[in-house]
Image (cartoon, rainbow, N blue to C red):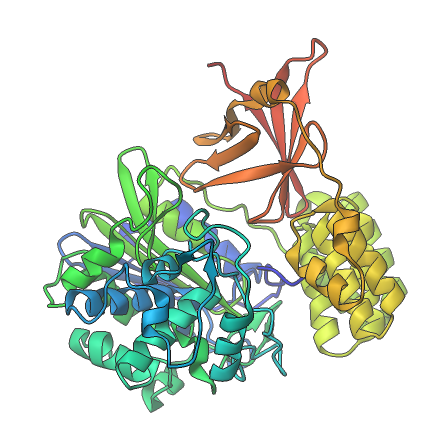
Length: 577
């Protein structure tokens, strides 16, 4: 399964321009420079706004590896799911204009003849769509793009409503947070429908034109097109997402630049006055149940560090990763835009909360291996991987996502021999990862080998029973995945021994709690999520590909936990109570 993957290692002979460096710390600046030099990111633009309205911009890298033209504050990026924050504000604006209510049933605002799903007599409300508690899934099951490199271009209104009417809710409405692109896309579609215009037209009328955001929108203007930073995946330029069918536009279709995004944050923070500010305030406000994590308004999320509240959202499309956030109270806001598919959240959060660590940057092994494979063949590439891992492991990023990304590049290019070889290598390197078998299974499925596809998807589900992608595909292939999942019950007395705080890194604590037979975890500044047993001491998360192993000493006392994620094993000592 293709996830958020890191970009490849590319020597650029790099062009790094940096403006107004005065309020960017040395460690942040050096970290970003390394990302560009190592090819982790192609280009990065950081914009910072202070409480007095002063802005600073910092630009690194290039708009395109082909042209080598430098990015700057006017460079346009796909902002992806940050679009959800705009959609939340559009909903809040409708509420304050008394055209809608957050507690309105979804059914009230659907076209005639469309029936929304219910659960035990309860109906989905608009607020549930906007705070990801509608019980609708992350993506609809009828999402099958003709072009995976431009996935939202052909998802139609008919498909949107066909899925809604056919979907059976699997849990009580508002009982659980599940991030849903479908739900927010549906929200944007309904808002446009109620205003008798497209989502893009509504966005322009309510937000971009009143705020003077001339380079923010779905359709590229001539100026935006001129300033567009091309997206990159694995050091290779990828096509933009075009949204010919703007059905789910409210979930992630907007493009913008750092200048406009700081203007947007300035109004959200109350630094600049605008009639839209009350709607923005409503969108920031927690719309979920009190004392329940995560804290979500309408689109916007909030993370808490001690007394600091950060209102934020991130985004990702095929060749872009973005972050926007601000300290509640107006102290500082930041936007980080990158034209590659390697995340930049840590940069934004670190600027707003310096105690939060920046990611360590190393060059990807994928680019090194790709060069050998393409020039000397698959066997030479596999031999090079083995040699480098044995002798120079500390010099490269050998994380499981590196080979996974390379495998998908070959898969997209229909180079099946190379793709299968790389995916197989990844299963050998990470035999306990559900995701690598999911990817290997996908390659066999694409190659028409049903038996091997079933074998690897089944292995993926065995390793992670929460892998809905593999479960759905196995169903398509005629396999009942329920037979692969063993129900494990752990005694409450054993669960109680796992309760406590575990230090995974300085100032980064994993808190484990228990609610009856349900174990829950919450990392510093993050939401609380349930974990589920694979064995008595191994638990998995459903919201992300990760597992926890609780470790006992010779006396049988739990003394640490190990987080397994992305091919890494991170130990955390249990802290004294």
